[in-house]
Image 1: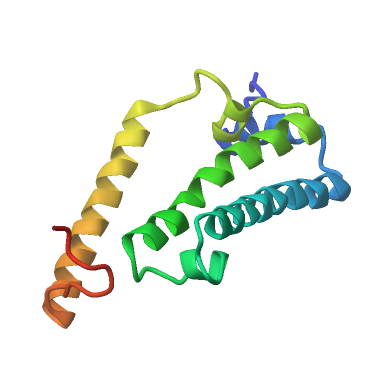
Image 2: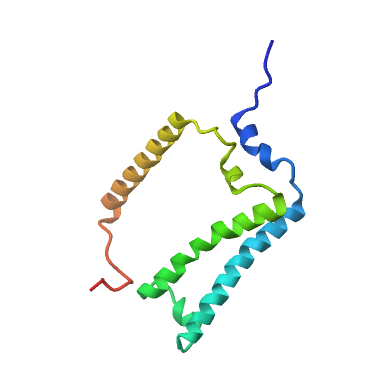
Length: 144
């Protein structure tokens, strides 16, 4: 007698199968991008209050100063809270369900994948250095 055991992909996707409406996805995307927009507006306001002559453009001018580099990198901090809000409000799920069912971690597969990723990173770095040469310092001024 054969047991009807779900595949790993079916187990992972089970939490999302109850609410697959397209309107939820559209609103979730709007929530996430709205969070990014609010963050950008906040940065612009801080730039104006700090006396930047061109507001957000002076702060977000690229990776030319340490401050602008940190501001751009700080936008990564917005993604997790925005996704958490969208998941809780629209899908009535916990954030942890994005990473699979609880207790389903296969550590041997995890470390195997980690080893493959590390090997690929090392190999691509060595090949890039052999082909292009060592990286040069550009952009942000050296620390004092």
